[in-house]
Image (cartoon, rainbow, N blue to C red; front, top):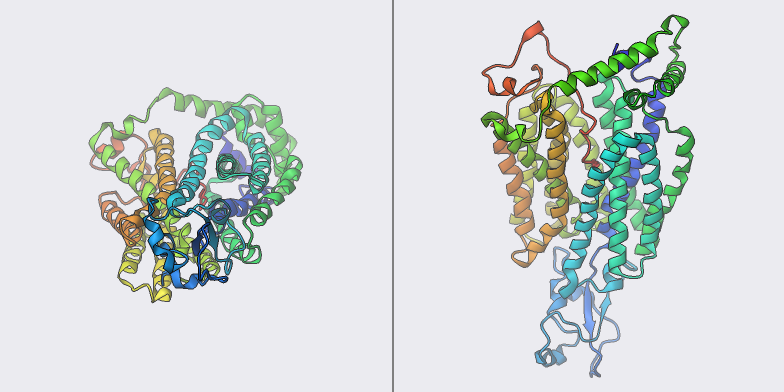
Length: 546
């Protein structure tokens, strides 16, 4: 008897699992906070350089609105002197954008940001984007590091350690004395976010029956969307970046009660020869679910352990590596396309989410709208996935890419239309990102599915690292970032045509199933989707994301 059969016996999604998912979903809210906080803490308000030399006609009150473009940008701040009569002084050998006095910033929208505190404008503007990329790189490092540590030491202990790390270093970032210390602390927060979200998802998956795993996974995505919306309200109420950073980090200390309520993974315990602990947890879960184990099941611990080990031995017999993903023609084509789809989905998702100020509308309202879009985008996939994975994937990519591309043709003055198009683009990309989780798990054959999802996750996180840097292309053309957000998904949509349809089809088990003319139809049935525990190594949000 394997573990999934035991879950069927005690309840695959009863009171025990529902309670567990409450504990798993709560950190998703904080994932959204930390992933998107730079939208507000790293915002760039209109600014001007006030020179140190005496100047006649120096205005006491600065009119920053004169330097703000219709699209919300303030590039003129780096080229227009504070006092136009002093324009000749710009030819003193200092390059344009080099402030020889001190920068002054508008406080109409923000009381303070890391930009206003450390002058991350003009010559230093790229540091702001690099800081966000370094945070995203922390997510990549955390996924690699804590994934292996969790396999060795268990899911629960890694989750608890990372929840503590997230709270401590998140609060520490609120008191950072300089930008470099702030970036280093955010990097550590990024690693802990991966450690929490990835292993929380794995823990939930290992306790949930096969039929409920897809729905359970989508529930966690909704909590990311809730955090997305809640952040808009928090940022609106708290306009100082240090106070906002503290507000999203300090509540993390409340997770100390997880020490008493978060269970271990019985499946992991069985795999590590700790069957007595596993059986104790199984009895507790069965009791909570109203399906207590009777004395007739006394032999189940032995059968459960043997069944689990037998499954493990079966997997060990056939050894495969990442090279098998690109060794044969069809497998290589499908793998490279899936890798690109993961990369472009996350690149555009965070490219849009982290740069909402570009669309010219109120930044808090735009954040709220983008958060609200998450809910229907993730819900609609429940209805389209069962009909066709392939058509769903290419259609939502096409919708997202087309909407983003259309924004470059809309004049900056029409900020509402630009925001609506960006919202539609966000809708398409969010739905596409939800689909690629399921689709990629079905494209890869069973023998290399874990390797395929792992490399896909790496490609996705690479997209996350590059997303903040994408907006440095504005120095080439103001339309370049949205052009990229439009063309990349459209290319992905076209490439999806080369992938097989997997809805209501047997899952491929071997590479031969992929390379052969037809997939095995033996038993005349459709094999259920098996969600690997690495399936959400992305955490993004989702959503997480992250």
